[in-house]
Image (tube, rainbow, N blue to C red):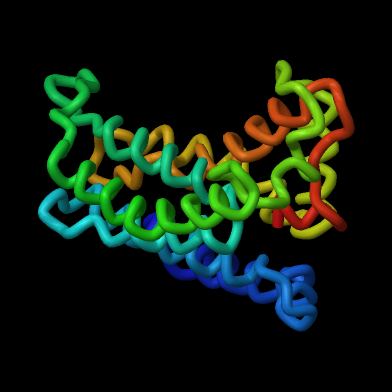
Length: 221
């Protein structure tokens, strides 16, 4: 869906299949592979829907289901909305922002809300907050703060230990997505926004306290 062909597409598939922590978390019954599958499937549909505005916004429904597996999916929904709004067109050698597909976007948000909002009501009834009942133990113990370079460096270490080749190639992937904006091979920026945005969000939530990683760094797999 991102425009890779031949050897590079095969390399991407092989790297994903050889990610040991996905296998380990699946065998241990953790939610990591489920979230990864829903998020990746949703991103693939997002790319198609971004290129063809007439398609129904089913990607947002998948992102909503992903939220039920991992609350980080809420950020994925926000980033997908931003990526759908930032549609560029090349006209006369210049990049111009196209008119956003508001109706489709609102329908997508509604689909995600149908999945997510009932769960929030359950959390509210159980613990008095729409956030997951485990939020206080993971992030609620500290005041949000500015991003810290040390935390972001540690996140890179987590990802590099899990998947060193993909981590090395990620900056090139971000540049490739940026270079394609407005052209025939435009695929949007959602994968890049997600890879960069999630560590920044957790860095902010960590405040001046201990960095949030999850056991074995699983929040970033």
